Image (tube, rainbow, N blue to C red; front, side, top):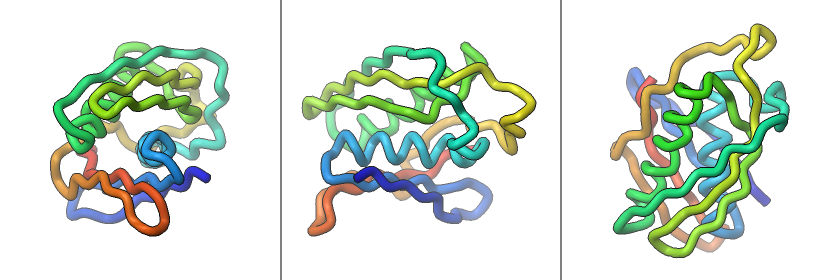
Length: 136
């Protein structure tokens, strides 16, 4: 079960994903990031984009993942709301599904990138959590 939420942080916004697996938590963090821009339920999974990231640890892998999504959103002018994430410790492969940005999305803000602020990737009794603050 993938869950996501945002949390307040001064002038920026925190994103948090939770899941039974690390991959689910990363997918939840990505959905939370989309929710900062628009309601993820409004984004139809029309087009698939492959994303591949590598980092020295899980925390940096989370920021690489979210920043790769920001790059794809900016260069393709798309929003994503469905994610199939596979993680092998330092390597992430994912497919993000979404569609071009349109008027019905009513985009609220532009996400500039994931930061190291409040960066956390950990496992607890409830599963995995993946969070950081995003610059908007």
